[in-house]
Image 1 (spheres, one colour):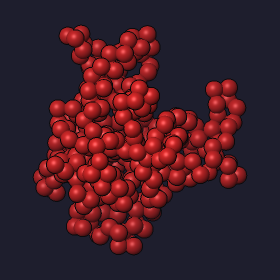
Image 2: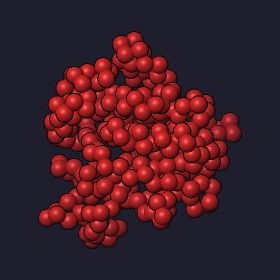
Image 3: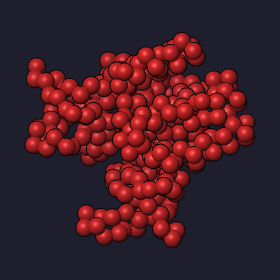
Length: 293
């Protein structure tokens, strides 16, 4: 069975000032998700599952199912969570690990998880497909840190720690910036620390088996216990992956890509993203319309 593509598209786009996953970036009105879905289908992925806010379904149904004849399926990430007949309500989505868990009834085989608002590059999808269609352990597709920074402000990135090409841990670094050729971030004491320019980071492009759903079934109860004491925390996927590795439940193979990541953290990132995507069209990597490839 062909691997499934699962797209996290329910984000609120707080720093961007709107739903950046639906903002047109490509030269023919493409949104970033158009490129990812097209590249995934070309690589060989079968089913496409989009995790969304409910009010996005009519827009994306028109875009993909009616216009492009792409058989996507939708999962709604709600702000309510029911465990053992008790329902908990949050003011915002619960986080990326919860989003993945919401898709468990739609995903029955190995799957690739991506963000809707990140451009990963065609060969990254091929790397993921080749692994997921051959092996039975998760993988993480990682990027050189210098290819993931913004010229318009600081960013948060998960710095990868690996051993023999297997993931050991990913450490969230906040407010990363480059200054005089040096990559820096403030530690807990607000003192600037340097990150190697050769470091790799996760951009939330993970290949999983359905084993992750079984783990979250149990682990989410632990998260809710913590959330009851602090409603500001989110149930984030890197923490779940880290726990699975620490408990020897999975080994996660690290796959390094040299693709140019493109993202729009800030509104001012949009112009540069448009230029870079136009260049890919000019080079013939994408034809005049993504879906005509």
